[in-house]
Image (tube, rainbow, N blue to C red; front, top):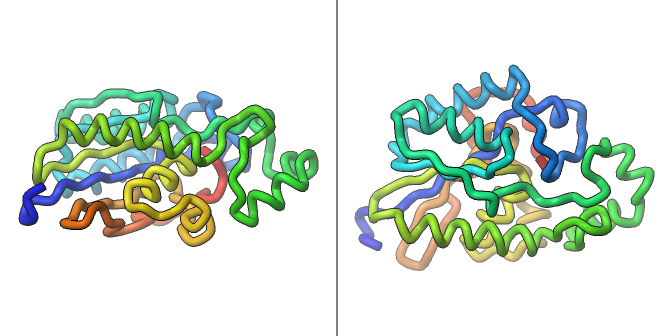
Length: 217
């Protein structure tokens, strides 16, 4: 990596869905963007053009894929989908509201608030599982990213935070407690330096609005 030409990654959470607005745990349910989400994606696309990304890679779930495609269309840059950037699979919690999960799984929700990592909803994934598959996707992307280039990764709330933490070397429990969730169409800017990657900016957005930053989406 040339010191005067660092590589850059923009980790972008998708726009809002109706499930986000209703507080539903989506996990890997394939829910589409709402009208608000489409507007957010368009605004983010214009704002992210300043970084001159050379490619966009997205989760193959439609809410992230459409967000990524919207970013790619601004300057006609290459787009691809990669299932490794999917959201955490939340097992039996998927499709339930936060209140329903709290009522049905009170002990697990207490564990979650303490920052413990475990497979969500009984048969879903842990954050460690998500970090491992996202890191594999990032490593593949970086093999094709030249010095000075920028790429956008359109992903999800839990996946985006796990990915960023793993890349900069923050343990997942610390990141879960210390880093606020990425809001819909908010992003993290990561820059490569001499000693590795650093978080240059966190939870940035093109427009103000509700964040919906703490649920898996």
